[in-house]
Length: 173
Image 1 (tube, one colour):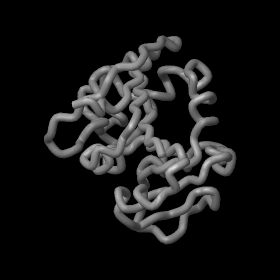
Image 2 (image 1 turned 135 degrees about the horizontal axis):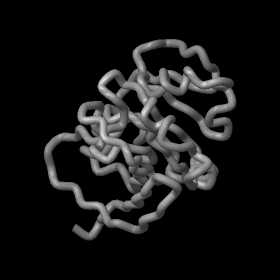
Image 3 (image 1 turned 135 degrees about the vertical axis):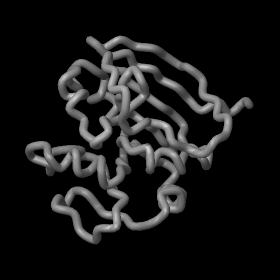
Image 4 (image 1 turned 45 degrees about the vertical axis):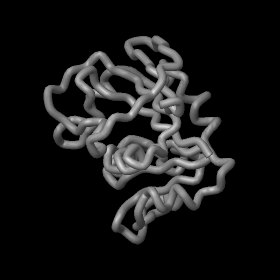
């Protein structure tokens, strides 16, 4: 099993603005300017929090979003308005540990989902695209507990206005 974080942040490290909105991202470029399609084809499962799902929910044809993956939303809700997304009300670390070992898991946005996985040394790869935007305030990408975590820079790519940084877990330290 490999766990990936794949997402875009602002130059000052925010996933979303202070109101949890992604308008800045939609104004910066599109996924067609990145390697998103290739990345998505290699994923089996997506995992996201309720706020990330709410942003996705606003898009047209939600049933066409993430059509080839099993999609889990960590929420207290028992039902979601899209049948292709499965609500989960449990600890994300315990849930991920139960997933079959041959699956690739994409953590879609959400520092509340990413942080406990980082705290438990479970994130294998981070693919972070940086948009040429400064927000000043917002929702940070990283909110894990204090503790030194090492990753190795594998590659740097440029896609239109985005810089993409690809990191892997550093198992040698």
